[in-house]
Image 1 (tube, rainbow, N blue to C red):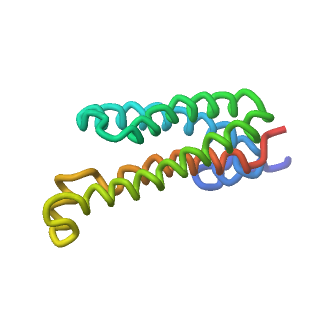
Image 2 (cartoon, rainbow, N blue to C red; image 1 turned 180 degrees about the horizontal axis):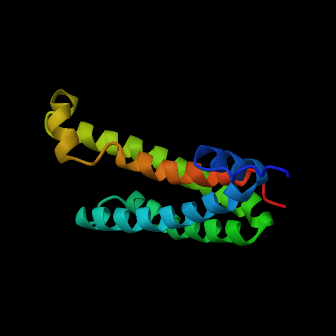
Image 3 (cartoon, rainbow, N blue to C red; image 1 turned 135 degrees about the horizontal axis):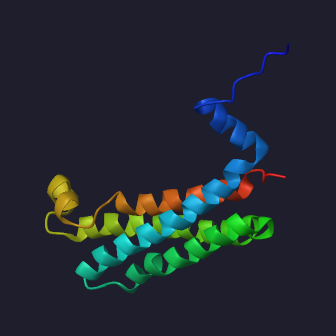
Length: 149
């Protein structure tokens, strides 16, 4: 009688999914969902600020683009290696640009960096654009992972 090895669980299962290429589709789907949720949140926050700077529209527009690329990456291997990395790089670049613009916004408030703690709490959220960058990073990672056969 041959003993059967138990199915991998926990971290072993995750490692197996990465090795076999199954995780690539999952991460593409998570990128799509993350892009939509983040774009909706950004829209609400930038609307509260009356879209005072035209650049405030960029992450709102890139959200659906990232979502479409993520869904395409789930469905098609070709899209996972073409559209998804392009959209992801654009999202990452926009997130880094947003971090700079938010930092600049904090500096322009009364007291500037001398009142950094207050201005960072009451001004534009400094770390929020980095969350967008994480969504782009997930898409970029999904695009370089091996696809299941």
